[in-house]
Image (cartoon, rainbow, N blue to C red; front, side, top):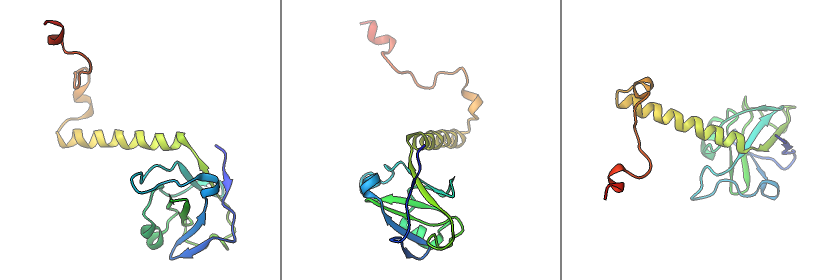
Length: 143
């Protein structure tokens, strides 16, 4: 995964949130109607931090390394809420389909587990059982 520096200097601040225009390199990212479309990930000294797609007001209030790539702007915070202009750390971003789809898979798997728990099923209860049949039903061929 190729990481690119977000640089410094033009990073501005509001609360724990710092802003950097990245549209020239990474496009628009998330937009109205596609609030989790960006595949941009944030790294502090080469280590992945935060949660993508975090609301800007939460980044401003809580920081914690969370970030959002919204309408061409990267909104982010350092992991310890220090100022990235002066804390001596490097901040890079990378565009990753692998991380994006890995998170989507993990989220979907967790949602299914929660649904089964609400239905009082353990995941092993369904082993060997047909829970969804896809394709033509047997009665279709009998006509």
